[in-house]
Image 1 (cartoon, rainbow over the protein chains, first blue to last red):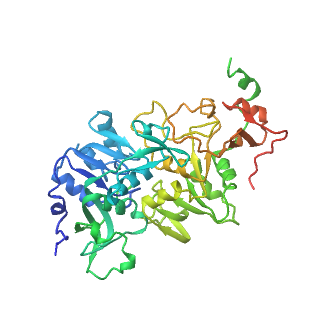
Image 2: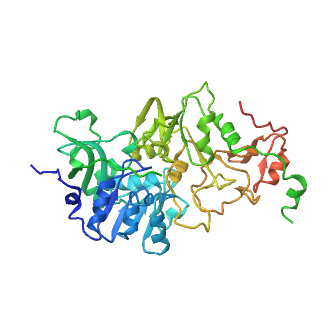
Length: 225
Length: 234
């Protein structure tokens, strides 16, 4: 049987190549895979396309990767008030940004995970977001076509995993993590606790193991502010 | 010259509602048992003014339904935060879900009311609330476009004019748009205005203000009846 458990954070990200397209979970300081992000910073993967709700909290979360100039393009909904390293790189044109409405960011990733080739939505019609997108009139409303967002890797944070990769999340730290887990070719989860197979009640599994490819145990890190 | 009339009729000292009073007035628009999303800015103050006899299930875009008050020092759990990263409590019957379901609730018309802040609202109910032209940096959309496009009822809370005195209720938005024809009601420091197919209906005015004075500070025509009631807070 395929072993998903990795002994160290560095081993879990060791094969992520330059130019990879990577999703990063987390919202509002909760549910960020900060240990995996630090491992990716140590590895020094560059020219990353990052997909994330925001662009870091000072040196925390994705901030570290912008500080190190590892990201060349980011797809995000809300870079955020403390994303100073991102803003510096963005002002210097060292990183490009695609701004996406937050729910549409979710659905574009979900479309990728669900094997759907895009969808129409009223969100963004008549705004900057609609520029260059196909528009149609459906069910009496103006709509634009949104395409899936795929990824090579998703780095996510869960609370508990069994050794198969069934995951549970804590409180509102769930946020983007289950969606990204479904959308990437390889999903790497850092979790607080790994338990034997069969000890998570099947009714309580939030992300089924089929979506999770690598697991590593690490005590969660949080950045204030 | 445009603006001359404003200086003649409206003395600078004439009091307007505070941000807290705008929030307090808006709280009265929320239905008992309703599912409600509150945006950044003035809307974030509304929960403090909810009438005691009603229960509202506050929704957060990061996957909470049934948020209670903010957590007090010592009871914060940083895995349980609102959209502004502030630790919150829950009320009985609360639930967690992922971000896609959270936005599905707004886009799919499941939320009863959403309340957002605004930079400009047009007479057709177009909303601009995510970017100020010429502002430094990347800007950010967040959940505003999903919520504005999908809410069954959208209320915008904002000051009636900019700091420079320019109307924020306009014929056509000049700031980057959030969504077209999405706003149902505008609550400002001067008035409550409903956006209807026939135009902007002036429903209430702040104490001490007349319909004519509010019209002077509004960039689109207001439809006003004979007697406009004063904005009420209870």
